[in-house]
Image (tube, rainbow, N blue to C red):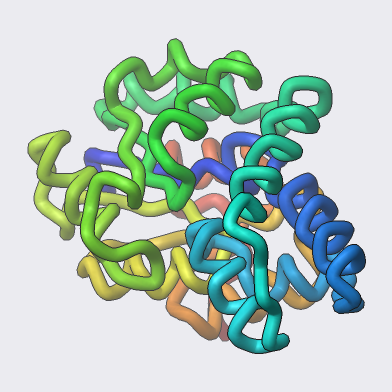
Amino acid sequence: MSRLVIFDCDGVLVDSEVLYCAIDSAALAELGVAMAPTEIARRFSGIPHRDVWATLAADHGLDLPGDHFARIQDECRRRFAAELRAIAGVADAVRSLAPLGHAACVASSTALPALRRNLETAGLIDLFGEAVFSASQVRRGKPAPDVFLFAASQMGADPADCLVVEDSVAGTVAARRAGMPVVGFVGGGHADPGLGDRLLAAGARHIHPTMAALAAWIADPAVSTRSPS
């Protein structure tokens, strides 16, 4: 079993994807583009937020004002301060790793200052300390493997000795490109009924619906869990 567990943040540690998608859907509506939060989640979860908006602008021919993304970020900060919550059971799941001999860290597409702020808002920052890494610290965001390889190198771990926990296709692909085994998590508020199948198709070894199920499987991989047929 892997000795370093690398957690994605949005939709895995904190229930933020559902907020991001609602904010982006409302902002698109103001620009005359109808896209439901569920569609945004399906297409863009795991991808750096600035890259999401670059793609949306290109796809829909949007001429975004220069301060557009800054205003999106301001709205995220406002909503997150009031509404952001940790995923149920995540603190206990992370704490269960050390007695088993596993280290833990975070590797996220969110820019580092916002990433640390979100973890603090959700009451999780003390679980990880300085072991928090962002795609803003590397050249390429997910689905490139850079942030996972960076996290492993900073933690002194070989990629083959890592286990990634992801809720997105982009993140799952990034983990596989990094040479790391990856499991899918589908307990976030943005998860739709087909998410588990998409994660399996992208290369996830197992799918876990709750943090308690993930922790039980890490403690004993013989525990029943959903895997490819």
